[in-house]
Image 1 (cartoon, rainbow over the protein chains, first blue to last red):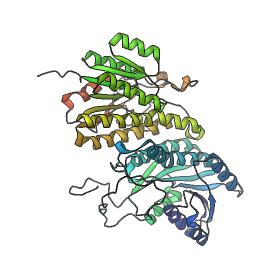
Image 2: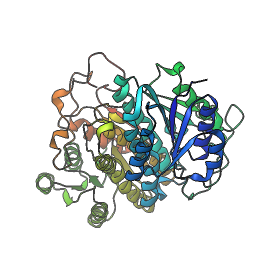
Image 3: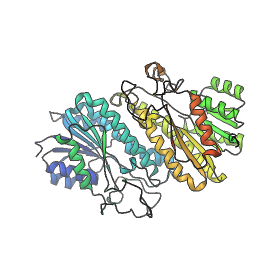
Image 4: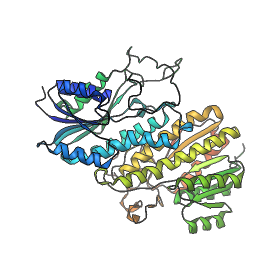
Length: 247
Length: 255
């Protein structure tokens, strides 16, 4: 057991966020979730996490987040940033509105939340951003999303250098495609994706796979890992495979 | 053996900057009819006078202005064969201390503006049965540069955008390539009013392993090659033009 470390899961009210929170609570962490979606609140009560409702894009909501986190003395050990909005469209057909929304959710919100949380994170703490396998290898049908997720990965690397003097680590977990509940924090798709090829390991990525990687980066075992990323996709992006509809 | 001439027509987005200016000059010398945009009226007019290229003033941070530039360029050229983007704005500040407004502006200038214009040009090329796009990116997109985090972030996104467009364009005879210059002198200028000290400062850099800084000419010559028939099967390329600066770690250098 982790002995009551405090961890904020931003975007934690999403399905993936809830899976991460559930795992951390199970390991003995005190978890607070921040997000717009109170749909999972019954689950959250069940696992014993607390929820702060708010929109990362709204400055007053971020200020309220900090205020409420400050109620508890002792700072944060961990920050997990899960914000994500998948949008299925090619770049050439991505409207200004969609482009702006995808960047807002996948890169601006993570930066803005990390900024307000930085002073609350204790020396020796750990920040984990949830990226996407598309940042390792972009997907044509996920144009703006692929762009934003690469940005997130590179931003995390530079942030890792900035906070290294405080012994705070910053890492990224890049999941393969996860079959989440339809409509989960996403924009309506412009295209319907062809069925995903089954990853070489024989099954799709599960939220629990991502949660396990997050747990690792928050742990002592990862105390010398920073500015790095871990792709958790069952080998989907390990190599090109021919004769597949989609990589 | 024949030496390729330049494309018939070209539009250079950001032609008044140090890189863009050199690109405009090289294209004009290669016999290309060039239209270029930029914010600086004085620099634009001087370049137009020197090269015979046509200047359309416009500021890419203003989306309507960027759209107007594209329409104007098309009106002047009727058909565009080559589209080059040479847009850049650096901002020296840690992520933790950069205001939301600056974060948004750095992304808007370095990435979103280029995306919007490239999307427009992609449509134009598609209707014309093909075309060539060259994005001047940065070696920051290949290796993060810690003192300019938001520039690094935006340029990393730009490189992916360029790659994705090459994949999309392949079936329409559209070639899209990215050039990643390293430290270039003269290089990126400050573009946020009042933040002139954020212009690239060459005095803080070590030379590339090649023994010198890059020069905008290095970039311009690469643009000409990528635009030529010699590069007919080159698309989705990420061309390092940095004297090997980003190829491998070295002791005692910049960053």
